[in-house]
Image (cartoon, rainbow, N blue to C red; front, side):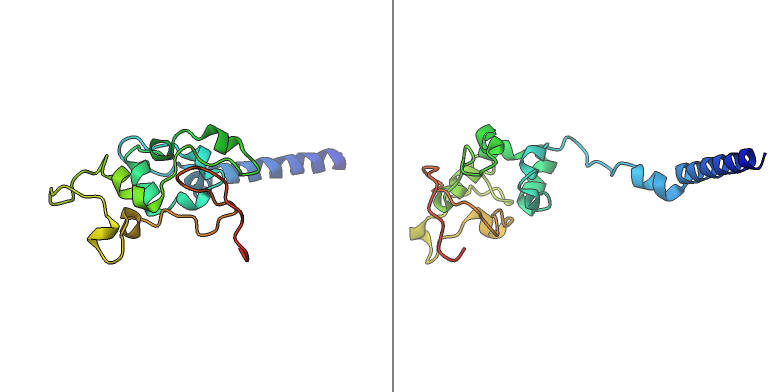
Length: 160
């Protein structure tokens, strides 16, 4: 009889704990999905597996909010995504001197409506690139370096 009462008591406690957890407002809030921004958002989850640092990076975030994902600029890059040794470059990379020329294909005018011009070394004492001001769309630490024009893997730099 005592054993049956003990099992019954444990069962009642277990049920009470489950109910308390289930109806707890904090648990319910934790399960609520975050509000989605208006419109579609690009799915960059394939890229964020390795490049999680770009999830909150300004340039990537703003483009994702406009439903423009990594693939739009860097191609599908399936071989790069599947390469666990990280020796395969993304399908498309941009050397600094080609960044502005690509950006103006989607952003042909500035906020005042004036046409944009690609930055050139001749136009200023120091060349400037879109990503100098619009998000630091760079990896702060790289395990691999590629020639961004040819995609060729470059030898590791000494000391890093």
